[in-house]
Image (cartoon, rainbow, N blue to C red; front, side):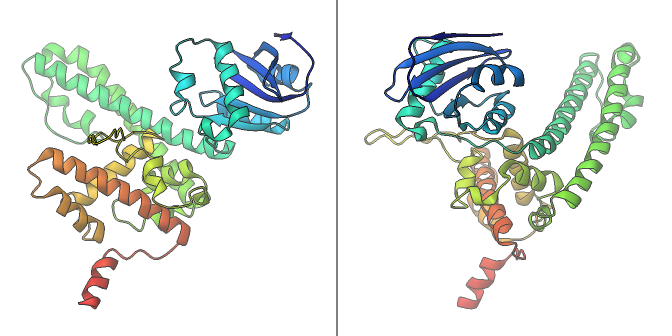
Length: 359
């Protein structure tokens, strides 16, 4: 379906497109900022073509969301100059006092007309990269489902007066069978079978991702020089950033992953806030896990580990240690980007060696 409301004929330079699940609302502004057309369209390739393919391509703004990757690619193929807005950074859209699809579309168009930078535009990945990243996310969903099954089984056994032994998630369905009380065995057995099936699926997907990294993304080998950065972390890093040249400075990667503190300074007030947690949650979690490994008992002696251990102190202060982990994760992300750009051979104690030579 496509319906439009044309107010006046004028040169149209800016379009705001608000995406819903099945439909989209659009508003067309003239070069002088007058609304010359608005309407709704079916959110499909055909719907976009019917409503927007009949006009000369111009600038168009959409919000980032579930449909925005394919919509932005379709509009670009039609010749439009597409801006994908980040609603977390544009409070006029995400927290407006008066909010409707039509107003959101108009606000997108007006912000685009005034200054494109105000929309804090993002760049979507290519379709092939998006598909490969979806494989990583799919594995992550299955891992979390298995974790919920294991936690539920342990809680049910505790409620029955029993206790399951400590073991890895991979061996859980094998090692706990003999420790399940008879009273709750009918309830626990399906959970163990489901966990076993998920463990098998996770192993298959892990092998698939190993092959993908080696054959299609050889740059991940450069990142895997760092002990603690494995296939999953390096592959997620490459797929999420896609192009290392997107960042003028490697330090920007820490902010891109949401590993920098929020800022709300006012006058003399400079409160210490939590990290922003912007960007891709999966990659942020993987980088933090790598940082935890580097600071743990099996971490390799390296410049980053030594720096992080100084921040953590004796490790007894949990808050201080958590801050050290985040700081190491942020610095690790910056370092990984630098390695990716240069392709250099990784030297774990490069800074320590320089200090020793200077001394």
